[in-house]
Image 1 (tube, rainbow, N blue to C red):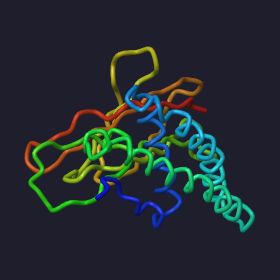
Image 2: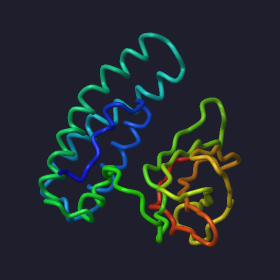
Image 3: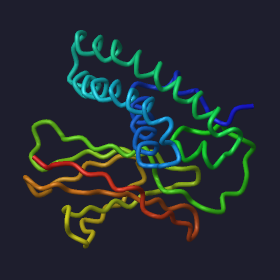
Length: 205
């Protein structure tokens, strides 16, 4: 029985794009998957135009939505192919499968001892709003709320702490013309808290 969930085929375009981005970021930066890097790069080549079309489709219009759906097809095909390659590569090793960024198949419910950091983090500019950024992520099982922090690239101090129970947030009043980095952590029941997520960044305009 395989380890990965392939239910992403039934997910929304947004969630499919978030998953693809997470897989790309995880596998490109992990030397464990160097042999699969050519396939990861193919996924990235399909993801980039798809995500641009997805954001354009948010403005409405049949032509934009049609382009999004057209570009979604090759991205999903490559995501599915890469998932099967990861399955074969992992050869039953859950840690390897999880490190790829793909979602694992759900198993019987167990007690959550360690709260994992949020994943699938994406940033996008808010149209018509200078210095605004919208941030999306996926919380691990057991996450109840989230803390978001940011800093200008090259600085060490994290600032502008935000808290939310949602898996998205809009952050305003960011410094124009600067590259700003973000990360998010999760809180669970009691004293449970995750480490910070991986760092993502965006030029503010």
